[in-house]
Image (cartoon, rainbow, N blue to C red; front, side, top):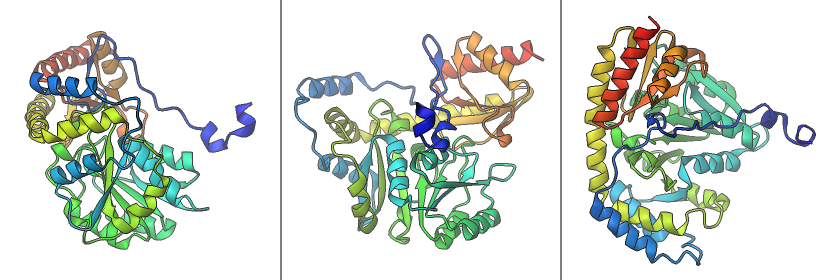
Length: 356
């Protein structure tokens, strides 16, 4: 039976849950709500129709890597490792550094997969609480690193679920004090005002991780890790062969040839975010947190009932109440189209009024 053979930390886990969104306005998963232009969809359809799916993909995905390098502006001496989204890269890093007694350290609340993957791979996990306004608590972070001597540190930038950018100087101090690797997770880079990509050449223990999921490629599952060749050459040994399929390579390369289209959509999402934030701030009994991502975290009384009220009105967002003590009565909404955002605000106001 499983309980006799599986590790206790695996038995104690809860599987990552993805709710059914059939028939709902889907604002729960930080996806880009805008479709591709018709001409670009036709070009992709032609590519897919002629794809050699009977053959294995290019194991190194060299053309795709070159395209990523071109649109990202990576410094000289920096290499790229590709993953099936960010999750595979997080797991690969943890596997590589999971020596007996090794610790993975992050902040809390943050992306849940850091802690889950530490358990998957047998690493110890240490979480450093953020301050009350979700800022990085630098003294606590430095003390935790001194105590735990982590092999691996993850910092989401902007942070999920709070949406804020941590102080860049504080992150630099973390990198300089870290006894091991520091990974800055820039999953929401397209919506943020800063990046640690330019710092890669300065700090050999710094890696930057990104995903294209939030930029409009969630269905392709493509992420990458950037850093020194010395590190990535070793990490490549753990990457499973052919982890980036033929269709993902072809379609992602085509989309990155039209990177300007995706960035225009990201710019529209930032404008939509400003509109949505203003409406949330102006809604009675709601406290919205400023965001540099494509979502907004907000606090509302009776959050569980408000969440159900939204679902009854056909709107699905993320209920974070109970996920962490700092997230009591917190909900998170993805920035949608203007029509979706307006529908959400109406449904939210009605739900709040219903349970006032």
